[in-house]
Structure formats: structure tokens, C-alpha cells
Length: 256
Image 1 (tube, one colour):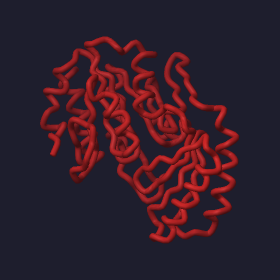
Image 2: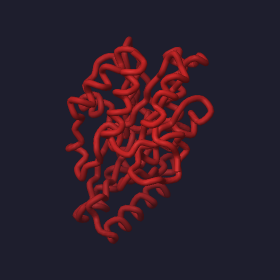
Image 3: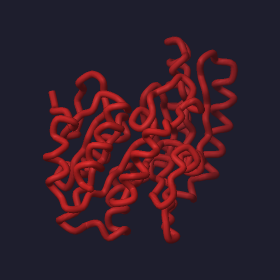
Image 4: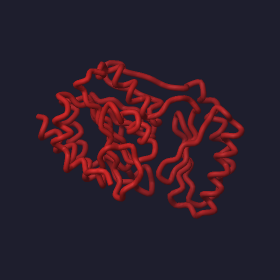
């Protein structure tokens, strides 16, 4: 069982004169909800993240579309990375998009999945710019099996795509060497944050966040958000988005 980040907040804050904070959204800044549209950031958490961002670089990395995550967080001066890091934007013209040449293939796969999954109860198909997500939180076992089969067939038909898994969701995305870990490293380099005194801190709850935890294993601190213990490459844990807010508030208070 890995230790609580709240119990080690002083130790984490004391390790670096300068933090760079990377945050997931769903399940990290907001609770997981049955409908993705209902994941609303609380005013308290927004205030805490805004206070942190006034002093250190902050980026929010999400599986959501870039515009969606930017509107939901609504804090100026921070970096936003949508589509699991495939679509990045930030202050002073910061911009990066990965694998835009795959978009016509995504369009074709989306059309095929819509036809195959039409009418299946509890399945929500969501097109994002760089992926197609099939949410199955409200589906029965038969529905989940049909989603799995349809995605496997799409990957077999379109070798340029791959499937990734999240919490009650499968996604098709470009099959390239890119993920949240690569996005974090790109941001550290691009923002001039590669100096030894900078401590990258990544907080996330999902399978896709493990890429960032592994990438930062020797370089920074990973914090997994999970109510129950689970295998992870993170160094510390928090149990809920409420604990994430409290932890970030503690960081603000101790550093400034």
C-alpha cells in the first residue's frame, strides 16, 4: 500500500524550490459521474487551482476534447491538453497537435462504430477530435461484449488506430508513440522546466495516467487518486477529488 500524499505533503513541497503541476480532470479534479457532461468543477477546486497557478506552472491533461476541458476548468494562464495529450494549447501561443493526418481515418471508424453500436442500451459513443470513445458505464455484459468486438474489428480494419481502456470506457485513437507521459515531457522541455530544481508533480486516477506516472518515476512525483489500493507506478495516493483539492490547498499554503 503506497503512502498518502496528504501525510507527506511537507516532504513533497520541500523537495523542490519550484513545482510544475500536472492534473487529470475526471476522477481527479471532479468525481466520476454517470454522464460525462455532468462532471462540473467546483468553485472551491477552481479557486485552489487558480491560486496554485499564480505561482507555479499548471497543466490540465484530460481525455476530453481541448475546447471542452478548457471551458470546464476556465482558468486563464494555464496549459490545457485534450485528447490524452494529442491536442495541447497554452499561454503565449503554445500549441501542439499530434497525428492530425489520422483524422480522416478517425472519421471512417466513427461512422462504422455508430452503425454497429446503434440501439445498444447503455452505450454512449462520443467523438472527440483525436479519438472515438465508447462509454459503457450503464451497459450490461452483453453490451460491453458488443462494444469490445466492434472496437477490435475497427482496429483490425484500420491498422493506424489502437484501442486504449479507461474507467468504463474504451477509446480508439491514432496508433503512434504518444501518450500523457510523452505530453508531460514535451511540456517540461517546451516550457523550460527541465532544470534539476523543478519537481514535476502529476495527479491522476485513470489507466491513461499511468503513462505519466511511469515517465516521471525517476524525475518527479506521481499521485494516484483511488479509493481502494491498486497496482500503480505512482509514488503516493489520494482517495478522492476532495482529497486532491485539500492536498493542492496544502501545497499552496506551504509554498507561499
